Length: 198
Image 1 (spheres, helix red, strand yellow):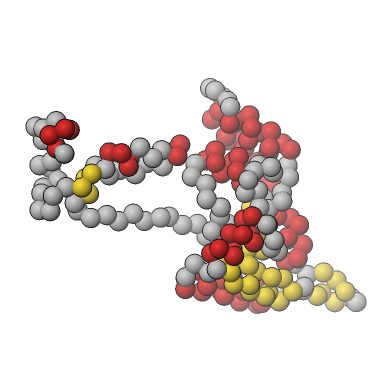
Image 2: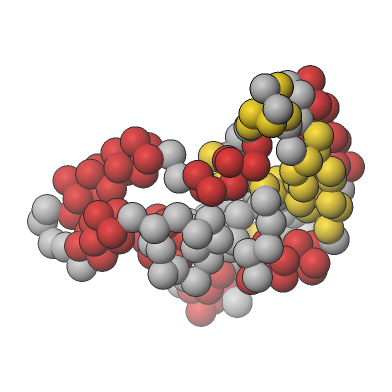
């Protein structure tokens, strides 16, 4: 992540003795496997081509979480965002300047006020969320060049598993069950009560 206007100052050149000088900038890179490391090296190469002098600081997942998420000790970072599981979790936890994971150091009282208003709003919440999104895009306080999805894979024996992450929903775990090997998915539950299926 290339975060905040303050950190952007370290990423562009400045004049010294009538010539453009690009400062050395540390890019903290989360080591979550070869793909993450390759992406970090690709970004460092792009920065070098633009005249920057990046220094890659490779961090294992524990170091990364402590240094970037908890201590907010970075110039720029490339790695996953802090764990939030709902839109409100992101707005209150990451985007709000006083949020648990407000890692960028960005402060905007108007954005903070909108986040809090939409959090407790009733019928007008949709419009408040749109206003919040517009302000976040206008101010571009966080640049995320890569986003991803988590893939879920499960055995054919697993029944009634339908993950739903809306509003941090987790009741789908209570509905999931394991069928007998060779049993048809459609045969389970037809003409039986839930207690008979156990």
